[in-house]
Image 1: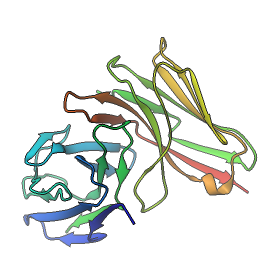
Image 2 (image 1 turned 180 degrees about the horizontal axis):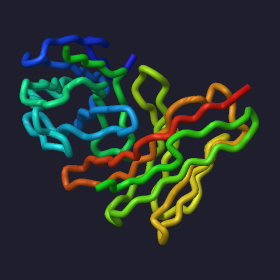
Image 3 (image 1 turned 90 degrees about the vertical axis):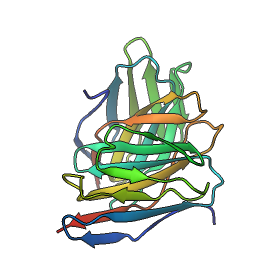
Image 4 (image 1 turned 180 degrees about the vertical axis):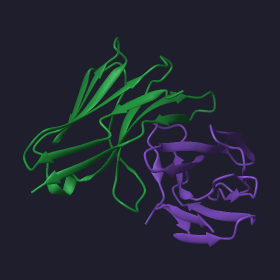
Length: 113
Length: 115
């Protein structure tokens, strides 16, 4: 089955620790995205990547970092510099060229204690 | 600055009724307008989408109406069913020089359909 996997589904960390969220896709999509979802806020773009070894900041990149060493993988690190990291994190991919549809993973709920 | 405004925040309808969710955008560079459906604890999934050269698109019980001059678009769910109970997000996407689309999402509408 083709799709996007995110792991783990739930993640707990102590304040001040960096944490890395995994995102893997087997759709052969060039573009990948990370979003943060908070209640009543919709989805806000953290980072996106259109090709291996290249990525761009989104609207709320501060306190986050990413890497894109392989086409199928786009991990997100939530650093201790992120002021309010507790949220639901969604990874998505998109075909390039394509019509614009994004395919989402099941999400990771991060709770910082 | 909220580039895509979505309303209402929540909506309750009876089974068989019509659900209507509205969105408005500001940036005329947007050229792809999808609606996503999200169930609790899951990732969103594309429901239906439209491009600005079309004023209406229908897929089954779901219809998008698009008004380019007013910079508004809406989702209509006909014969709403309890299984439609979910959160709906509109988005307005811009095409990039790299060939991908970057969406800006509305804040979402929580729809509850009572049996």
